[in-house]
Amino acid sequence: LSEALELGQPPSRQIWLRGSFDRAAILERLKAKGYQATEDAFPAFEVWGRDGRIDGGQALDMLRRDPAFLFGGNIGQSWPVALSGDLLFSSPDEEAVRAAAGGKEPFLSSLAPLMALVNSADRVGPEETGELAQLYLLTPDAAGLPVLSPWDAPPAVHLPAYTLFSLSQAFAQDSEWVLIGLSYPDASQASEAADALAIRYEQAALTRTGETFSDRVAAMGGEAGTPFITESEDGSSSVILPLRFSTLEGNAPMAFRFFVNLLLSRDLGWLTAGQ
Image (cartoon, rainbow, N blue to C red; front, side, top):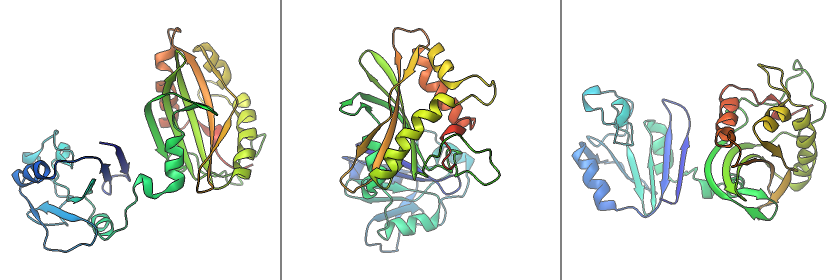
């Protein structure tokens, strides 16, 4: 498996996988689950569904629950599965299956800015990479970071609106790194964002406790580096804010979990775009 992507929310989730698959083994497994090739002909994929149907992915059958079956098995569903060479797609959503099988693939390498941010997820410095361990990749809305409205309290400095947000964990230099990434369509906006990000970080506070964000990071044995910019061939740019936690500190292994909890609890408001 070389690439994996999960999109959407139930009941319209999508799973995209790319790698060296054993097609015969996959089809054998699907047939054992009652799958058949669909009668519909699609230009991009060979599509298989339970009893040959594309519209049955959201049906629940708890007697068939199989947590080991990736495509809906943990909740008793049997999602249609589409295959094409080294690419595999599955979703309970009939419209999503038809769109993908018709050639509209939203895979990582088909979206240059998305892939550029993914490629920057292990960058602990402008010229240095670490070993990537975990990566969250979200739109600002999905991350709870929409553009500020006129009724929101204005931050001290403007942060240009970005298209994608990433939170990743990497290891390098005997340290754990937490990397916050923002994707921009051009270098000028990214440059403005890098300056703003440094200021906002120093002024940020935790909503629940009022504690200064930088003080909390320091208490965990961490420190923030200077935001830097990576540029891709398509012209888009990513801004990375690196935070380093020494693995010699007792709290270091908890650093990334701390940031994930902030993301899930919507306590990263200092990253909201706008003035």
